Image (cartoon, rainbow, N blue to C red):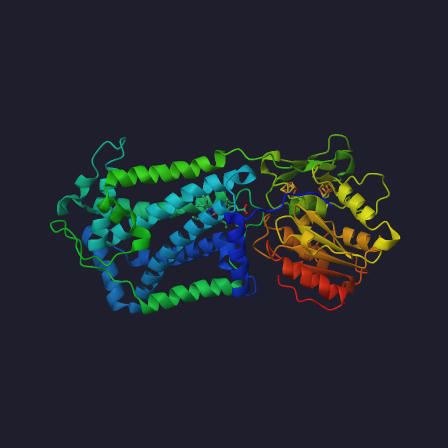
Length: 508
Ligand code: HEM
Ligand code: SF4
Ligand code: SF4
């Protein structure tokens, strides 16, 4: 069996248990924690749509700003006022989801190694969310906008390199000019555009990013915002008046929490705190991690078919002209700094068939630390004795349910870095070697450590993705079960069921 480190009880495992519970509560793959990036993208889209409507009616001036938005809410509760409320609640949700997304990636240890670029490009996105959200309150120019603008200016006044005091722009009504408002509109519209640009960078190293949550979750998010907007409509507070300090504000604690913190301490303290948190976030990826296995291409066995390029979840493989073959032939080339060491590419390579009669199984691409040749040899050895015939073979993922836990006198298990490393031909090979049945345990959709491993496994076994399991392999002789870390009972149930020849229900 392939020796891979077992998972210790860490916050990561606890988080994954939480996700497992949520995966049961939210059926059909609608677990929100497993697709926070996609939920954030959906909220950004809702913000852009509702924002365009608001922009059409908005008058960019000190008096017009308040009047236009307040009139919209009072005179046109639907769709105007309702879209305004949607805009606010989508902004609240966006910040909460972005922070939760960051927290999830951090708890799951995803700030270093090949994910460093995704992490580092995510941090500015969070800053943009804050700037854009806080700036939105100023445009409205009511008492809350006044309070937020003055508090933000006081904060920025503590930035040593800013030449002039920003607070003076807000000390009296004359200082709040229409020109200032044009600038504020520019910031509130420009920063989201920067965010879209930043998002493009953020997703550069992600193959097929999930940017839209599954349909039931998308509908749930949209319905929640719509109901909230109808039930608790957002309204403007009294117009800003620089002669009177705002009191008794209806406050947005989600987006404006930095202001009361500054009131309770001082703007300088909050500024230092913000800089400190940002520095920590930017420093996290600098931690040195134990070196990861990296996929290696064998030029002699690569025909440039491109399957590994299409299946790699992290855009780590490109095709380049083959140095030793006839013109036109291509060769896969791995960018080591992008490689996750998942082995999904080996699972996709047509030359990774265990039926090849070579002494050593040498696929076009493989993980040197966990080569498929070792898996083939160990599989062969485990089923070589007459007494071994009829055993059930279980293939599993080292990051998912521990398949070793289901071993018994008639069950033998093999753990891979990701189930996606398993070429489907290995299922047929195990059966030909004498296994009675094969169980493949993959992580459930959204929790796959390497994003696409369990999806490709399911599609390869179902015959909808190459390389696929040959159709003559009877379906009764293999089962795919989705079992995350800690979900060994599901694997055990699948083993019992296939042993008894019962059909197990699988959850995608
Ligand atoms: C604020 C807006 C953000 C949006 C809209 C967003 C969106 C996304 C999306 C769509 C993905 C791809 C998910 C997938 O298909 O697997 C992703 C991945 C990722 N995001 Fe974000 N993100 C945001 C902020 C952040 C922040 C603040 C961080 C952390 C500092 C972060 C860290 C990451 C990481 C590390 C990944 C890679 C996950 C993986 O390798 O599986 N993101 N993000
Ligand atoms: S091991 Fe995974 S990340 Fe690395 S090249 Fe292969 S598929 Fe891509
Ligand atoms: S799948 Fe295999 S043969 Fe095809 S390009 Fe990748 S390494 Fe080469």
